[in-house]
Length: 513
Image (cartoon, rainbow, N blue to C red; front, side, top):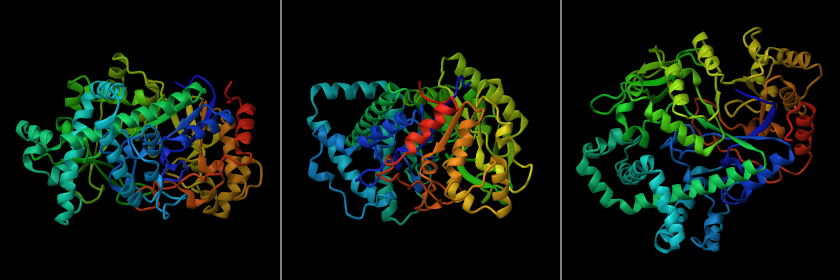
């Protein structure tokens, strides 16, 4: 339950500026916190922090518990003596406007690997002690994750040599390690022990650096809103380490996968490919896996937005053999029992429910039963099909909700407005009581969001900077270099945007006190 009025901005750390090809957890992360404080804001919303896989999407991670090692600040590692300053000279082709993941990864991984190797050989006794304490504290997920990533490096190299595309642990690894035979596990631990240790060091650094940033934000009255995808990737340490928690067959292949049925936006539905959970088995264990998952993210953030919340009421279950999501059925999920178990076991990370799309009564009932705020997107309010999205119009907002101008899955507000029909633009103007333009509409929607009765208001940083479609973060259903790659201009704090946000926050009762 949202208890008081507040406001914040949406920006993922990969989008932070800096010279090394992508945003990280170095000085620019602290500078952005300072910007939020100057704007009298108290929330920083981010996307999932896990290590990204195919397509560079933060919603397709190799682990729901691990952090993205690509976010580790190399400058901080150099300051600690694990890298030379000369190793921080980036290639000239690195862009300040986009993350070009392939070249960035190719350049950064060897430096991360060399720094971790140096740490293992030369770190002080005090630092080694802190590292071993971290490994012991996080062993429940870290051991499997580090071994998974070490083994994956070997088989990914074999797949490249064999020109095998789409290699995953369940379709390319040797049968004995795929099924986690004890002898195979012991052999791989011995053969890949050093590589696994490097992955442990990366996680140690990630959590240390991220929690330092979070602490800095908290000390300035800013809470971090994280993001939890409801499903996990098939090619992940999560599924490999606990296949019994998922709907897999005896060959460890998914029998049913997640998606959404055909709708207004997609005639054949969306076939996501994530394995579905074995809910009866999970419930029989007291939802142990989910309890640990929520506890884990609760250590990383102050609030968590749960993506595709409706999946806790029912999942669109698509047979894995189907090429599209047209064939499937709604399978119920024990959301009430799960959230009761989380509450009873003392898991108290506050949740925001992503309840967008076609939402049925049982989803609303589940959200309301636990007092969870839902989401209201202003761009949706002005749909050309009159009456379709009335709930998103501000006069229909509810206090226990989060209002957004748009999200990472939407176009920027300026880009959205530019693509509207003349009738739709007139509807925006009529509702807001003023004549908008591409130059003014983003800030008009920010003002409208801040004025809403919703207790929390959030705007993407792209809208604050009044950027167009070129700054869009993600186009759902499309895999390409433009997705997840937008970067914040280095001069974003120049000008009056922080002062304007501060004025709105004070005017509409959302300012940090």
